[in-house]
Image (cartoon, rainbow, N blue to C red):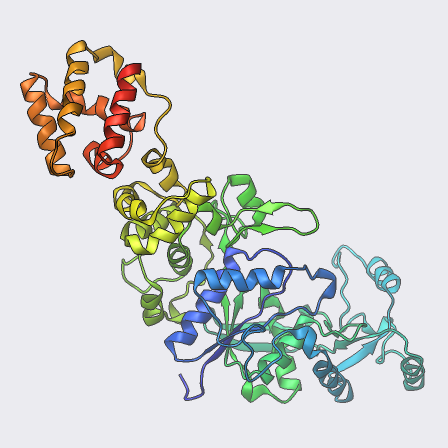
Length: 508
């Protein structure tokens, strides 16, 4: 690394839910910046106003906050290179586009939508089924290359709607070194003359990303590999604008693939296969359609981040569980894989289960409290502190704390009678009647004293304790599940334990 301070950016468009691939891009940017003592910038790329979705920017901020990936500079926090929304930087882009026209690296194009459609139809052929606005066709179109200078001036003076396009050179090779892929080269003949400035004065991504990365002193640009075809345009813009020596180092990250490995993982795949692909719930403001997120599904952010980090990267060891601090310490962009990584939801749930198990009660308490509150139950912190350690080994997703532990606060209304009745007897009923009488005088209400009392009474009744434990469990919780029966009784307390056994005896 050079002595220049590392500056990276995540630059999403506010168009909808934040895909887990986007969060992984954030994460790799964040880890790289933190590892090198640099800055992580959030820049909102909202130049395409036709795709702007209300609420999407706040949603992105909330996702990053939940993940614990807080930018150093952003529209929310500000910073020395504000503003951080491209729509607020609109005036700064035209001068660079006009500069490129003056230098001959770009040109005005006056073609209407109908003329562009006509071009695509007219020049369509078997070898070229999708004609592009490029070096071969630009002279057939209405632009400042094909038209006489005086006609161009007239059109501009009359305020004729126009765009500015880059003038891609012919028969050239463009090369660069990618931090993930190594040496990459492109033939300029395969790239069309991309629009740099739209008719409404807004820049396209191609111009804005270069100008903003330069002005914000970005040193490293990490983005998904789907942007690789745009790289030659961006490389040329850095060169044409005279900023080649300031160009960031590039890293094009591999895709997150469908579980079968065929193609990029999409929201549709999640809907079809029953798992989330967005970080958090997203409600489409136009359709009202709700798409469930990892947070609402019951994932801890630590597990979500851990799972994403190793989906395309490893530290060279067999280690799978990493805290955010460990990831910062160990992350290297050189160990990001070139190939796509298949998403495995079962593995994602494994990460969550492991993180639930290794998290202490204090960490889990607010999340588990919310799970109960969402079910309409206001459970005390004191009760939660007792039940979380008993349940966490059994819970893969946070809502399972309610499924596994609702009986702690809700007395069972039904019982798994088929599990009890075939071996039930008057002798066992008498045992429980006598045992609960003795419980009233039990001096210490803890696991050891309950177990001792239970076994002593069973011995006096000449019944094996093992034959009595299943009925006890079903009396307390309603079924064959839950932690150890005496642990449950300790949490329930003396009165509730006795009350539940009495209620069950009436049914058994």
